[in-house]
Length: 244
Image (cartoon, rainbow, N blue to C red; front, side, top):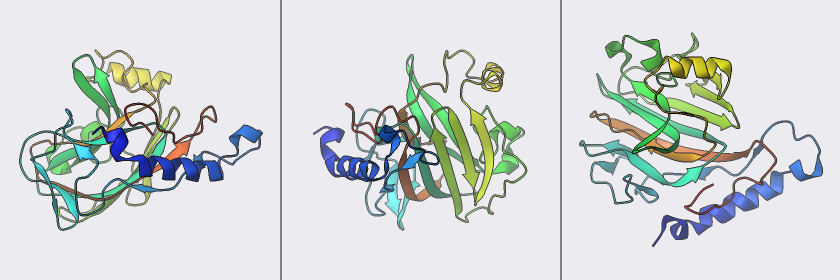
């Protein structure tokens, strides 16, 4: 059974919520992006809605003490749906020397799946601010507002993508703000390892995945709130291949 058929309830809830809030069609100001109903991507008990890149069930990610836990090397954990504009909140923690991340708007670039990344790691092991916790990995370093909790303590994170705007938040503070496709964006991508991938980060939708980087990591309270940022389409909406 396809992931689209497994998640009709999420789609209906999201559409109903947005229709209740969306006033874009009237031409009236709505004071910013229209928010839908928050949707839990993890129920605290199972990996329903999550799989490996090829759609198979994961063997290296498990549910442990109400969190998604990476317990052995075996690949990244993808959510089955595609997402466009959204606010994603989650909590995470690491062991010493740990390294992971949450990637979003992930799409295939040739034979690789790439996307922007909220970097998560023990910063004692990095020499680059653009690889430090909360960075938009390889592209934007976090600002001085960043305060990460000590190892094995839960951190609260938020990613907001709205049209060509992106924000990273950590423990209540905005630490990254960028504009996809701006001159600064292109300059930074050209100075990164993604410079061989045309249009990196410019796609408007994609998947979300939790990164397996060879270290134990925990995630919980993963919630996405779809946003309508362009008023051209009533978002969220269910597209082929289970897109919101």
